[in-house]
Amino acid sequence: MSMLKIGQLAKSTNVAVATLRYYEAQKLLQRPARAANGYRLYPQETLTQVRFIKRAQALGFSLQEIRELLFLKVEATRHSCHEVKQVAEDKLSNVRERILELQSIESALATLANKCCGGPEMAAGCSILRELDEGAIK
Amino acid sequence: MSMLKIGQLAKSTNVAVATLRYYEAQKLLQRPARAANGYRLYPQETLTQVRFIKRAQALGFSLQEIRELLFLKVEATRHSCHEVKQVAEDKLSNVRERILELQSIESALATLANKCCGGPEMAAGCSILRELDEGAIK
DNA sequence: CTTGACCCTAATGTTAACTTTAGGGTTTAT
DNA sequence: ATAAACCCTAAAGTTAACATTAGGGTCAAG
Image 1 (cartoon, rainbow over the protein chains, first blue to last red):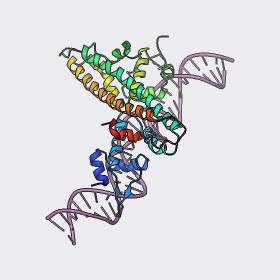
Image 2: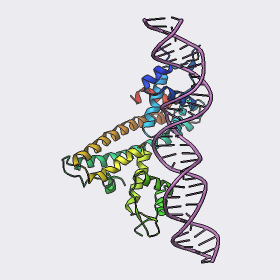
Image 3: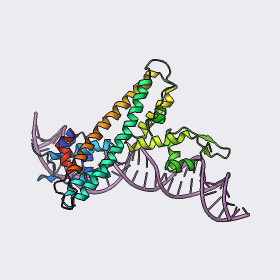
């Protein structure tokens, strides 16, 4: 129950088996232990890692960037606290910018959906670009 | 001064000329007017459109999704307010989810950068994965 | 003891989003 | 009037992030 075969990992993370092997080749997942027959054996921990990758990806991080986030762990043992803190803070301000951008899109969409009466008539006045233009975004 | 040639549009949006033509082929930009010599002539408005595309893309929206957002404008003239409102609200809840995810990554990173003393010693205790594992993200 | 569901590697194929190339006109500055 | 800097189309090439295929072992159930 402790170790997972690749198919189990795939099923519980909803990621294809081939994708997991691909992540391994791309160094996003460490090479797992192998059973006597050559099968990959993953610890439970890997579940979290894979889910993290998928979520980060849905947020627009490339595998490259995700690798950098994950390397904060590995590198932590080899680099100074100062360096790690620097990387973390870079990513942090990056994330904060994204949040602000998303929030301005959010408010534009909200205004739009709000203005929109929702009735059966033609909706000539509804435009997300107009909402974004009119001050919602700088 | 009113109409832009493709090179000017490219320069002021920091997008390659070929990319602008690609967006046109992909229906992300309407086909612009042409000068007598066949050159594309863009109205100022296009600046906003291109910048919107680029920002949305940086947030992890695919060109497909961006097209849908932009079509809220075009479609508005052809569809009922009800339909437009529906699309807007779908996108809205999508955007709100993304914001929540980003915020949990934000707080994980902030905690990490905070705990990290920032000093010159080895940072074995700093692990973004640990933070992410420990409930910062569901 | 075989059939179906797994697992393996290595290689090739696919899709999105571009970029580059080829081949050719146009405009602008000298 | 010619070189440098633009513009055009059509087509082929590139990269990231997978998915699929080929060819082959492994294991649990009946």
